[in-house]
Every structure is written in structure tokens, then in C-alpha cells.
Length: 199
Image 1 (cartoon, rainbow, N blue to C red):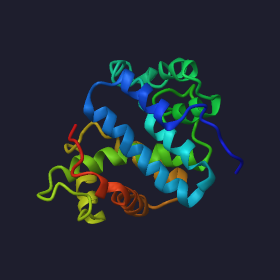
Image 2: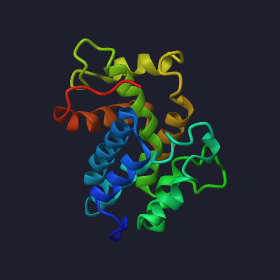
Image 3: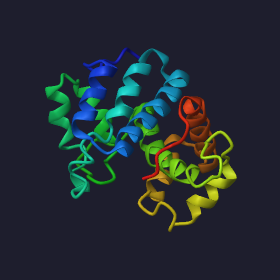
Image 4: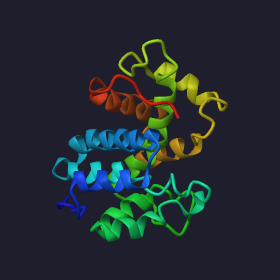
């Protein structure tokens, strides 16, 4: 794959995120998805790891300010990203993860977009499960424990199981594979953090 440009540095992307998000949970969620995307980029598209990371960091840029209009999620983000120098490729990748809310938005096509779609909600479910554990760590978390939380619709009820299942299908992965690989991704950077922030 050819090199992709986000049009901004990671530092500029973080400044943009912080300007529109004051809740520590939303900042941490962006960073969690960023690091998860970087993990998969190193396997599938290493020359574009920075791009994958910035997509992950900014994927929910407008959520905190417009969470009462989920069908318009990422539509508000587009002009903010453009004004900050972000590229059309960056905007498209971010908007593809909300095509389930708005059918007018682009559907995930690139591997990067499919991984964002499949893992974004799942990282939230894993994070919510981890903070309930005595260790508060993802390092001793496993697929069996995740499956139990996934099946309990009352747990982290805001996490769409349908989106997670649809994302796995897009990737051609069984749910167990998606679960295992996303846990591994989060374990790869968990030593940098003591805990995940609960929503």
C-alpha cells in the first residue's frame, strides 16, 4: 500500500482531540484505540502506522460535544479535522466507522477501516471488563472472560454487540479471533498504564 498522509502530526492530532474533549475517559478512549490501531498497523501496513494511529486517536473527536446526535457522529468532526490540516483520507477513514449510524457515510473498505470498525467498540467492552477485575489489568484478561461479558447484554449496555459481530464478519475473522487479537493488542501497550478508566 502507498504511503498515506494524515496532514498533521500526532502532537497536532492530540491537541485537536484535547480541544474538543474534556472528559478524561474520552481522551483515554482515543489513545486506547490509537495504540490498538498502531498494533495492527505493524502487522498489516507498517509504513502507515502513524496514519492508522491518528485515525484511532481522532475517531471520536466530535462525540463528547454531540453525543445527543449519534446519527451525525463524525459529520461534525470533518470540518474540524479539515481546518486543522487533516487530509480527505483521514476524514474518510474516521467517518467509515460510523456508517452503521449513517448509511450516507463511506463503508469500511481498507483493512485499516475494517479494523477500526471491528475493534473500536470492543476496546470499550474490554476496558469496562478490566476495571471490574481485582487486578485492574488487561494482562491477566482472556477470551473466556470477554465472551462472558459480551453475552451479558446488561454489562456495558452502550457497547453494540452487533457492530462488533459485523466488524468480525467484515474482516473474515471468527469472533474468538477478533477477541483474542484485540486483547493481545491492548496487552501490547498496557504496561504503559496502570489501569483503564471506567466509563
